[in-house]
Length: 96
Image (cartoon, rainbow, N blue to C red):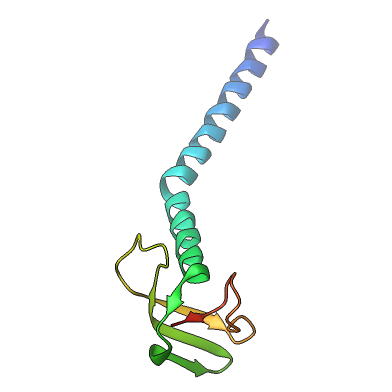
């Protein structure tokens, strides 16, 4: 009986430890990951003002980009690699 209760205790400890790690991830790590995904998606679909774009060291930086869906009225900065800045949808710098 003692052996069975010892294994039950280890199972409870393991489940509690996994729950604690999951809670930490959800509370502290996930918001950062989620915000990075949102920011990446914004730039992938952004329409950028061509006059605010500059090329520097294989990267194109546009400082005045906006959401084509119009959900976000603010402008934001996007950085594209030159291989992506072809005007093609899906990660490319689309300009007005």
